Length: 365
Image (cartoon, rainbow, N blue to C red; front, side):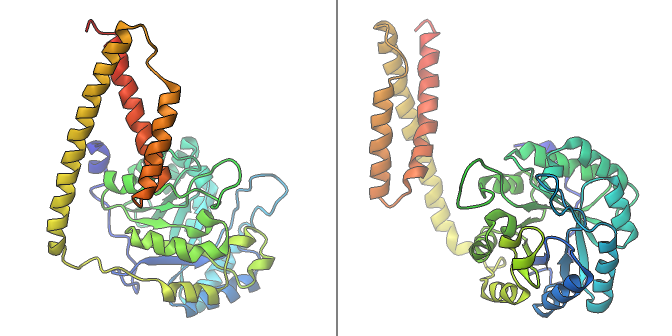
């Protein structure tokens, strides 16, 4: 456990806003990009009708390739302010450099977020952190880096925290992968779970729009995120998503947003867990049994290592490994478990078994 990181974030302030129920998930919604005054106002009116209190829009858009729509620029901040005057919605936008921060703060934007491409660049994050010096009341969210690097994510959060920002949170939007996959960005839920463990008390939102990449995945991913204890959602909505200038496939109408939000099941975080104590003790006993079984397995592996060393055999027997992997995965599926889960478990066990045998080879045993 990285206790230094945990202690660093002990002084965070609650990520709450006036008029927003702190006991409910924080919802942020609006278009991927500010495209026109009319588009912004129409979308914002629809978002406001859903009960969402925070409106998002991209003013500057980092595109993968040049030539695409890279945002409307400073004009969009004027439209954002008009949205606030008419609807009373709080405002959120992405910043990627010092100029963006200064312009957004001057325009009275309530929440800034740092995108995945930017959070992967410590130089860019530090430039943003320097620009935030002297603005302790601004709220900042940091998206995960494009690649699954937890330390880089924590480092970006630390840089912003070191600038004096105490209303700080994270956004999980999934991680880039090569090739075709169900999700635009793979969830890899274990990474934000580990972030929560390491930085307990740091609010973490989920961005199901970027994670799924398709509007039909937004609802299921939103529910999964809330079931896992995420503190809120950032969902892209647009008055005419099919005609959006960026990320049209992952945006939904405010009407669809309302349906998704209405169907979400919000778990009771205040319910007593006393009734779980017996089951949790049973889990603890199972874990102890697993450790003892693994210890027995590793002792056998070391004995096998002695035999292989004495008979000048290779440590890794590829065919034997394949046979074990296939058999255990099949057995797991017959018991109602995931074959891919068992493959991951067996791979880890095999790596440790090989390490144990290599130690035998290099010992005087």
